[in-house]
Image (cartoon, rainbow, N blue to C red; front, top):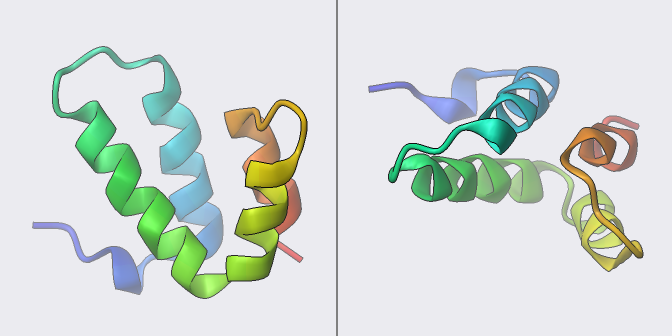
Length: 66
């Protein structure tokens, strides 16, 4: 099992972006785990991303990697 807590925030964002086009039935769960970990690290940036007009996966890093 992968320990998300040991990954850098940049790596988490990279994985989140990669899962955006995957269609496996488990991907929504994986994306949820990734978002939970990213949100724990930068809740303010994560919320700003969610509150943006069209929160694209590729833009998450702009909000949380500051």
